[in-house]
Length: 194
Image 1 (cartoon, rainbow, N blue to C red):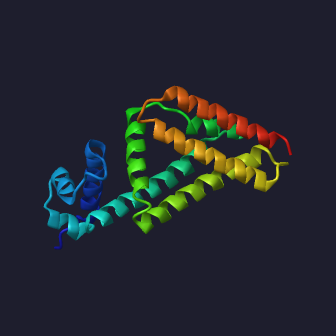
Image 2: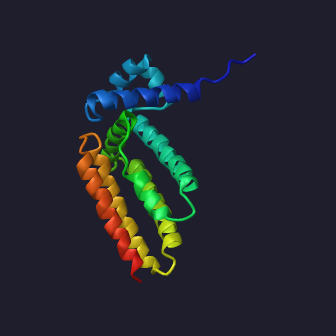
Image 3: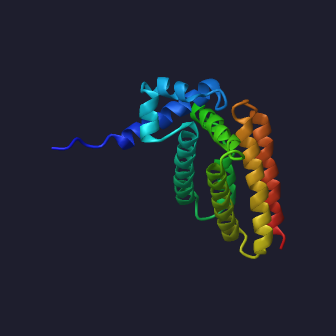
């Protein structure tokens, strides 16, 4: 009888190890050796299951793109039938856990590789497009008489504010994140005027 494949489990262990390395050393200082040590595997095992350092970073980016997609699906189901825009802002600009800090650090590390690795840039473009799409859908429901191009511009500005707030999370700049949330509320007021 054949042994069950360990590929999926090994892949996740390698990606988990990369995340830990990013949190401890940063992505630039993380080597294939560091990842192998953290995963308690030989480098040849890492190469067998995923590939070289860049391929492992790309695989982590894929995992995070899927994670963001899942989080958006859950968030869209969670939003109430009315005042969805306000609930969206509350969800996007809330700092409440060590996990959020770690996620922000890992997300920024992946983002920093987008210029160098085209696959990660593609993931980031898809993440942005999904954010804009969901924000537009939410705004259209709350502001049905507002022109779609105006809604899209506000969604882009909201995304910029959100990215800035994510970069402030590891710095524990909660007051500034709150100001970005208030600025986003002001942006949404533009949608009230056709």
